[in-house]
Amino acid sequence: MRVLFICTSPNKTGNTARVLGEIRRSCEAKGADVRWYDTAEMDISGCRGCQRCRGTGVCSIDDDMTIIKDEIMVSDVVVLGSPMYMGAETGQTKCLIDRFNSLFQPDKDGNPGSLVPKGKKAVTIMTCKLKDGDKIYNYENTKFFKVFVNLLGFDMVLSTIVPGTGDPKDIMNNYHAQNAVSDAVTFILP
Ligand SMILES: Cc1cc2nc3c(=O)[nH]c(=O)nc-3n(C[C@H](O)[C@H](O)[C@H](O)COP(=O)(O)O)c2cc1C
Image (cartoon, rainbow, N blue to C red; front, side, top):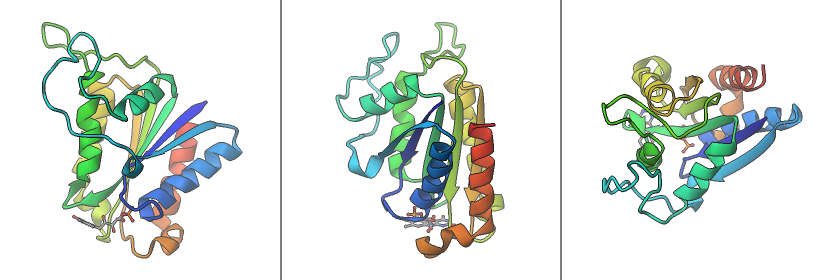
């Protein structure tokens, strides 16, 4: 079981990284082969919309997105973490998601198609400050389902929002974070 962690928070020791880190520790303890990338340390620019990837899957931008795409192809599970910024994922996360467009290859009749091999699962974790953020921002979970399952052809996605964040040192006292970790680990390694 190979698990790819992509943490898109600008804060490498923030709430999002800590929740993902707990999931990582449990996966490693259960024998998973884990890879971790902080996009804050990577060069991933926004899609230019040139559409040169259509039919080829090869993006015209030569940056670190190639590393992420290669890792997705060989991973069984992708775990994506993002803080909530202004009611949505961060701009960095959106750049990454837009660049998944080169993996999304609809056929000439407009039916969805994907270069991603079948049988993969995704976990998305968002963290946010508002205490009811898991309910207020629930639409974000629908979006991640559409990206990973409808567009990229993943089998399943588990999307969770951890509300009520404060000092990152205390995040694992937050029962939403505890539930998110335990649900994610069960989903990844049933
Ligand atoms: C620019 C910015 C926008 C934010 N927007 C929201 C928001 O719309 N709703 C919310 O509940 N929290 C919001 N927050 C709080 C963060 O989502 C929250 O503190 C999160 O846990 C930070 O994750 P991190 O520690 O990984 O950076 C915002 C924080 C920043 C810096």
